[in-house]
Amino acid sequence: MKKSKNYKKAIEAFEKDQAYSIEEALDILEKFPKAKFDETIEVHVKTEIDPKKTDQQIRATVSLPHGNGKEVKIVAFTENNQEAVKKAGADLVGGEELIAEIASKKAIDVDVAVASPDMMPKLAKIAKILGPRGLMPNVKSQTVNPQVDKMVKEIKKGKATFKNDKGSNIHLAIGKRSFDKKALKENFEEFKKVLQANKPEAVKKTFVKNISLTATMTPGIKIKS
Image (tube, rainbow, N blue to C red; front, side, top):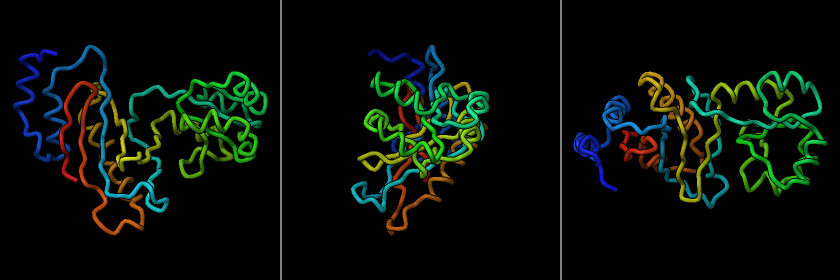
């Protein structure tokens, strides 16, 4: 694909092997031509964990101060206070009847699933549907709680889960290109703080190898870790 003159100029504006402060990186990112849609801004982290060891795996949640700009579709499994859960913003709410419906369809189109503790044994019926999609509610990811409406509100406001992949990497959307730099910086700093707080105790060496920031249609910019 042929690159525009503006794109080439932007590429020349930074050294791809140099690590920048978050402020510098956001300034560089701003110089890249924008796509015709509102691109997602993502942080990619290469860690030094051994993903094969259970005591080194990372799974945590972060409440981004300004959200990530993404519309999140939530299913809530609960038999209680269903109206309050709907009012909180859940897109699908139900108990055993909803589980039966999902089991019969063998599919569900949502981004996040939350549940009250009493529903967890009943979700075993659709574990093979939720599990492969990364949707199974989990205490560690703070998606299991008696206060289902509270969980839904927090997720809608910008609470997001992150975890390592098989290559020891972590990926998280922290906003959109339409966000101002102050909001993106604050979201990034909150994520970095939570990430460091969740360093596995079993990791004695350097935890974070490198961090990069990118928009959907731009190259990655290295950030000082």
